[in-house]
Image: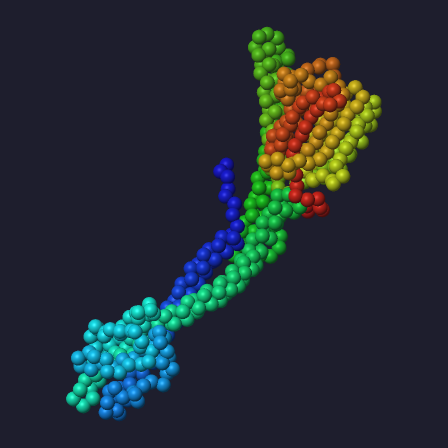
Length: 460
């Protein structure tokens, strides 16, 4: 089965919204900066237009264009290198009047064409590297024409824009952080029903519930209903399979018994062949019916068992059956997880292993119950050791075969370990046989665990 990719919907929503939020806030910051720049530039141009009108009015009121009465009240025009300059030129381009701030500066005329009002504007730089917004206008005084040129410090505007940009991004960053926190809270709140549904499904899988319960939003309520319907359908299919397995077993017993009886009543090679094949058929039917029953039993969802309680009960029973054997039962101080499966299956697996250990031991059997973690997660571990003769490495695989017994003197059918192996495989566990520190056989059984102990699931 292909490995499913795991990811968080809430995390995906957060990163998606965070990405768009960052783009939107950055774009908003640059847009606000651009709008602020245009607003300041427009305000500066309007201020310069006003100064041009003021100088034109003073020029019209004065008979001499060089008169000191032609001036502007703004003190910035009196400071050298301030970036605020004005000059008045005659028709030949000679400067006839200028502001005090124009010291060692030669403001060039604007080469752009004038509008219908005789007004031109441009961006220039003075000798000190200051950027200037320059407005130029031509006026007529009597029969003479003059050019009035006024400039403002555009570098100051750029500094204001830089300050505004920094403050805007700080504010937008704070707004973005608050929106990110809000989106995280909203995503977590919106995903709560999904988390509850996930926990409910896990509770069913772990055996805490027989079906999904609770109320869910209409977006995911159909999913919960479909899962419950799937569980009910699965239970019905398994029940039908059990019934069919039982019917098949009863249906085959009679024909096989008839073949055996007929073969026993006759002599000859044909009777021997029929008797031999009937025995094979009986063995195969028993094997596959057992496997079918195991598969049907372990396919039920919602089964779990208290492993410590089951093993304690088995140890007490085996101590009475094998009174001459000292059975030592050890459990960790922190407790052990529950077995995820049918209690009867756990009893059958551990019971067979413990019974074999008692049969083969000299006087001592040790049982340890615990848990361990590996690549598949936490697993229930059962270790059974005895002080008997043990097994050679080459005999380990032999004893796991159906009906194989290495010692015919010891009572038994030889099917115990094979049944255990079948159950272990069905549950996805592992069974390992090695040499024990007591001198005999050590059996390590690993099985899946339920999530937590708790009340048994209600019967469906």
